[in-house]
Amino acid sequence: MAIPVEKFQRVERRPKEAEAIRRPRVSYWKDAWIRLKKNWLAMGGLIVILLLVVMALVGPYMLPYEYYGIDLKSGKNLEPSGDHWFGTDDLGRDMFVRTWYGARISLTIGIVAALIDLVVGVLYGGISGYKGGRTDEIMMRIVDVLWGLPYLLVVILLLVVMGPGLLTIIIALTVTGWLNMARLVRGQILQLKEQEFVLASKALGASTKRLMMKHLIPNTMGPILVMLTFTVPNAIFAEAFLSFLGLGVQAPIASWGTMINDALVVVLSDEWWRLFFPALFLSLTLLAFNAFGDGLRDALDPKMRK
Amino acid sequence: MFRYVGKRLVLMLVSLWLIASLTFVLMHSIPGDPFTSEKKLPKQTLENLKAKYGLDKPLPVQYVQYLGNLAMFDLGISIKSTTRTVNDILEEGFPVSAHLGIQSILVALVAGIVMGMIAAARQNRMSDYILMVLAVIGLSVPAFVLAPLFQKYFGMNWNLLPVWGWGEFEKTILPSIVLAFSPLALVTRLMRSSMLEVIGQDYIRTARAKGLPPIRVISRHTLRNAIIPVVTIMGPLTASILTGSFVVEQIFAIPGLGKYFVESITNRDYPVIMGVTIFYSAFLILMNFLVDLLYGWIDPRIKLSGKEAS
Image 1 (spheres, chains in turn yellow, blue):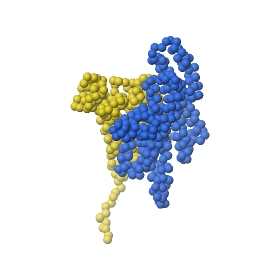
Image 2 (tube, helix red, strand yellow; image 1 turned 120 degrees about the vertical axis):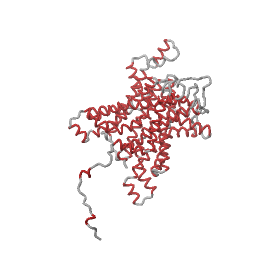
Image 3 (cartoon, one colour; image 1 turned 135 degrees about the horizontal axis):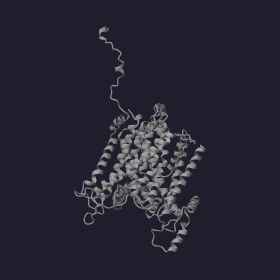
């Protein structure tokens, strides 16, 4: 059977149209966000983190008590009730207010420690990787030696000397905490700086500062962010661990770690709420950050693209 | 190879020297001396005490003496209980901690490898999801939360196992499990991802294609390759077991080194803090070194050389 000629339609060459980009442009970050949104575990983590931050901000004002408000007469060891949503502790302090006040302290320690690690690590690793040669050699030897020191033992040692407190904990956690970040950033920069787009930018006369700020650091942002989401829970965990050793923040200031530590003496009795609430929210926070970090790492890895 | 080992040895010694010096500087930067907090002592007694511990000499002399003592493995004397040296405490506590630690590492490795393999074999199915959720929870619940819960339920409410003390095997069960919990989660996750990577390799397909029974493919081809990354985390794993032992030994009242260390921190027994810190550091640094050597030996593809691989 023959098809008549008029049934055919000639397709003209339209190079403009053929080359046109029909789909909306998807940047690296948008692409990562799309992949992240599909990961329910990571999104759950993100939502929990946001909720925790909101509660840390407003939680202490939701009940008319102060975190240090002691009530020794009738308010000791009360069960959770309409007046005290999470019960009270052995000094009659409201557990709900203390839990969210503790969230503030724990999150502050986690986030501030992570940010300090970020700044120091990116600067140190960036300079080391970018300069290369002898500078890199010397800077990395220093990192290698510090790397050999056991992290928590150094932190304990520093805290024994400096004395416990919010500021000293953050200092102790960051003294060797930035090493991870510095190593990561250096490795990334070493790879990136040999690539063509950096050479092109250099050929166009970009200054070192511009190269760093516009090209090198933005391109390492993915791994840096992932590491950051793991640094926060590690710092929160370390603070709780230090509280267990009696090196945490000092009363009447509450953190989840100190609250758990206070509750350990009564854990075998019936006052379950003393341990339950701080332990629950501490674990939930660590869980949320870990889940989110895992998802973020997968989302930012272009190899995971399907 | 020899160059690599030599370089690592030098680095190890520098790290050790650094931590020793750091402890020395830190401990001497504390205002006052170890006896200021005690009851008011007569002047003569105080001077005698200082002379006994060498605190009357200038700092550089003390420092050299201290390093000399360290080189001879003499870690000093506990200030709070004057009859015991730090070495006594190490001798007493370390075997107990080592027993507990080795038991936990074994639990973590065996259970972690098995669970990781199951999760990988049943990827994206229900058992995989359950195991992975459990692993994330395992990483998120700290030992000092887990330990009291175990005590309460296994010990008090269900009366299954002893929750206190040391000596018989039953008493080691709960602490070992608590201590193994987060390393177990870590090993499971790592094992799962490395299994998945190996399963996708061509030589596994070849092994299957030539008709090997699945169990042999797993034991001879998959497992042997997938297990290598687990070796790399033995160093951090030991560190996490070690810091975990502070908590677990304290809560389960086990007379190990971790418990003594925590007590020395509470009592501000500076010589013990210094001595045990240095001992722990040396131990961890040595472990990391051994793990690196082991890694090169297990996987011949990895060349140990003086140059960094990056």
